[in-house]
Length: 557
View: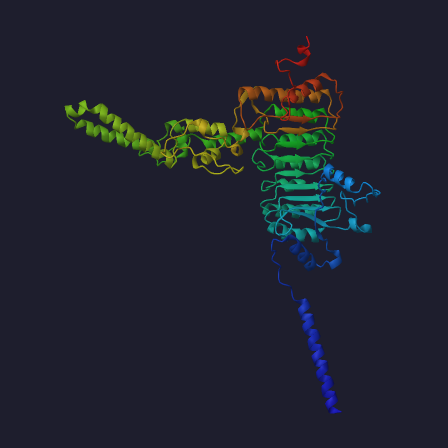
């Protein structure tokens, strides 16, 4: 009896220890998962660790594509078959299975999936595009994407359609998108958010080039934030190329905010405001930005700061104060204590004067030859001084004014790479001589509109408008004759400015869409604008002519 009791107590103690170990294992925090860059593997494991059951994890599938067009039937093969089976009865050909679509069981089509495209379907680490459509991306799912998306090296496109995003999920999305170094295309369509914080996705640190915010119920509140994200007097988005804001609720107030964002932005090439509520007031503001506009007080102050920071070449190179007094910061650069180049010139002049005092008459006869040698030596020393940081002549001043910032000049002198990946030519050749101005390419990324040429009209500083925008879509709005005339004046001003000051990087508006507005297509302003923009369209083809060089109508006479 005693042995049985001891055995029962031992079994009970073993069972209790086993259950305690199991409870301890469950209470332990699992080790953090390190993503491998293989999206399907990382996504599934992170969803499992976040508490989703196996049936709740959306599967990762290859995005379906339209099948290629089958080749036409070979007529020779059909003739050969008919000759062999001429006497036999021809059987009706079986209908081939459809190849333009695929079928799924019952509601399988509506189950959440994550569609991807790869460079090579045999290599899971080559995901380039991710599409999420028609199911809610909540906080848990956004946390999973936050961990796995930055590790996908080749990801360049992210697509969210009707995914129920909220203010929190958009803010979290904006926090980790800059970590995706190759991500350039973002689509957030059909995601209305009450706070309208979409501007977080195109902030100063954004690397996105093409962004679409269609059908998000964006009002003037969201348009104001987006306009400030495009540019202000002190900041500018330097990567966004295309922005689509169609099918929203933007009125003239919102269009004014967007136009203000284009004042200092010279990067955006395409803007769509189709299917909104914009009328003549918003169109006039856009036309003003395309032509020319006066600087505001804040912009004028910022312009003065930039001019002061740029300064003169003498003020840029550090030099010690003169013997008699300290160097004054308010003194103009031309009357300063002198640069390193000036001091070397003075020392050289003094030494040359001492030597000339001890020369004989014979040495004086050889002075022209020696003076040439001294001039050559002086030029070499000037080149060294220019290489060390001082400017050689006023040509660099001209280049600084032309590019609008010191960054462009430095990029040209050092031969650094621009944002587009093209290497700029240095300011000197291999021998150290300065290159001609025509051989030094423009650095478009460094242009600051505030440093452009200004015109003083009635006490206000006017600068040329935005000529970087080449595509503008204002279809299906409420624009009437007044708005069309303002846009027409803006395009005419751009064409005039292009003829007077041609710039290969700033060609002005090339295509504008104004269909289905509150104006008759036969209106004079509409026909003039269409006629003007027809020849500016990059896909425009002039009408064909007869071989004699005249139109066909003249050829019949």
